[in-house]
Image (cartoon, rainbow, N blue to C red):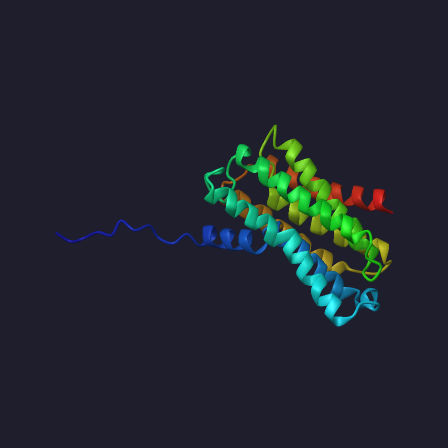
Length: 216
């Protein structure tokens, strides 16, 4: 009898959605934003030494990405959560709180940095607010963290355009496209419904607006 393989064909849309979700994970976005500001507005870093700038890059990555991710890994290994993908609302509570603390600390530090753009202070306050909103809303439904992250990035770049009175149309268009890809990826993977994704996108943008209005 001829053997028939039961292996399912590779679903490229699913693979693509996973790759997009990994690359644009919300924990990585603050680091991306920092490098974007450094690329677009290098004159704002004129007062910082190369060594201090390198240390600042490491600080942003460690405080906003590495430590929150490592905390989730420890929670998983200690069996406080079932998996590192935080698929349930209950599993997201402690990671939200941990991330909130690190984001608050990054914002607190940025308030005293006189050798970097003040707009980064607004951004860090905005992502701190996003974790607060995420934690509160998590009691009612599983809002999309990915959508909040990319929404925050989009909101920040639009705010930057107004703040510096400069044209950033290409940057806004690219991030808008990325926002569409990230939101679509979350829907393709069936991790969220459309309401949860749209709510996350709006929350991310609004938190950046509040961060700017309050901070300025």
